[in-house]
Figure 1 (cartoon, rainbow, N blue to C red):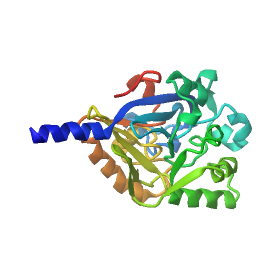
Figure 2: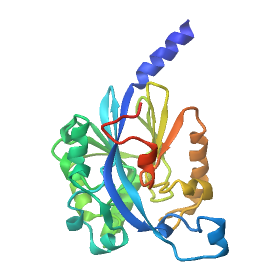
Figure 3: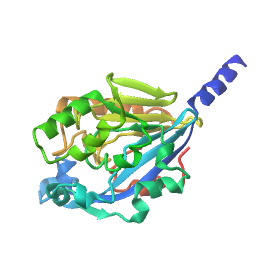
Figure 4: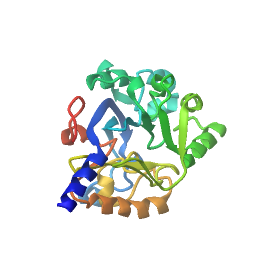
Length: 282
């Protein structure tokens, strides 16, 4: 009986009630950004130029008894004004309407920007930081790894036009930034952050366990496409090969946990696998 009571208490302590996936449109990209080798054996025998593919842009809201967490902030409706031309050419926005705006996605689940207590960034690339200005006045705690902060500032200091935007980093200066300095952080019970690197020095993944004992792993851009899990390799967006090749094995170990689901931000077939807000994951 004691064991059963402890189990019930542990489930209550997790207290992640709902997860919502926010649809923030699509961008297009050359597949070689994501995968270094042809997709099929036939293509391996007869190499041909890579094709382009549309990939999803997604943020997530985690409702916890101790606060509401937003994972990444997607792209803004002002992307054509904010992004440099090189980014618009290499990663053109192919789907974005009024429905995809962050404030409208939040409204679908009964929230406003000021209701968010924590923003967790997988990393600070321009397709993940696009709506920071919406949250500037509310001052939520912004969790980002200190390695990511340093690396993003180095990029803008060296005047690199992409993939970090100086405009977004300047907004961060006015917000309540909480640098993550360790390889692991339990932000709230059942909400865990792991430093994985691989893509950028400060890339993190988010693991959430709900009160229904379901696990959801949000890969950020450590994994861009599901096929990377088979190839265990990345294309032009590979940052650190040693981190990538070792930690993809750790990711696969975490994926073997019972009742575990993997959510890949840029999965082209994401919405065939998981429901969009206002529908929820439990």
